[in-house]
Image (tube, rainbow, N blue to C red; front, side, top):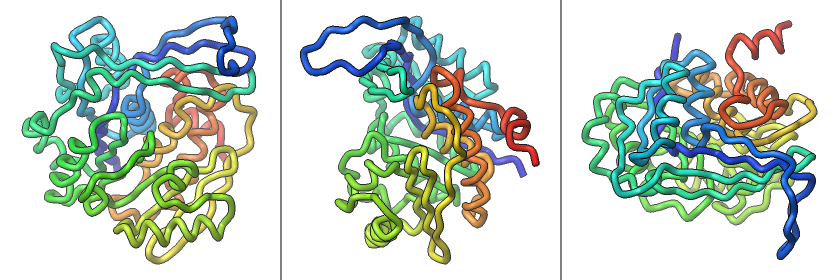
Length: 306
């Protein structure tokens, strides 16, 4: 079965500065090179889903500027439906500056722009799109209020909702009640539950805390170690595939997008989809950039064929 995936999220033009090491407070350093590319957590997740074979659509907003058209064209290049990407006359297209060191680690500064100016009223035109989906994904680079309204529409029509609470912040009332699966990384999970993630016992404790908050299905990604999952009937840990990372930008987004392309709507094959997602993100980290680094299904199959 081919999943129909809708992503409600951010669209950013990324500027990456390649440096030897992260600057200290007050320090001025020189960048070796600079690259510009399409990005934003929403865009990354949508492209990852599309390249893994999902029929993918996007709900978002750009500014009335060249960067906005650049982002729309980038989505269209991966056959993503952009009919529900609005153009905001008052705010510029979102952007991000990424500092990438020689070890492949990054620091990211984001300007929300049109992403953060999204309003719930724009969803009136998107209900039929959400109704037709199998999976709806959102994250926190757009207003939570918009995600909440979209997730309520999804639950009205029996659509599975996946929340990536990144960057981590206090979750508004009601949102978790309409979330089927939450996918934080270890830092985000600890921020939301107050329980540090450092071993299996602490991951189980995080799962219990999320269950108390109303979330029965959880995945915690822990970088190059792998990913923990918890469902009402099972839990476990899937190790990451060992590779030499060049750039970790978009690794988590690739994971979520690829996962959404393979997971059943009832989340019954969560471990199988999780392994595929790990394979996808392991390829992403070996490449530079956000969207350019995300692999296709054929590349993943070729890399990990038995």
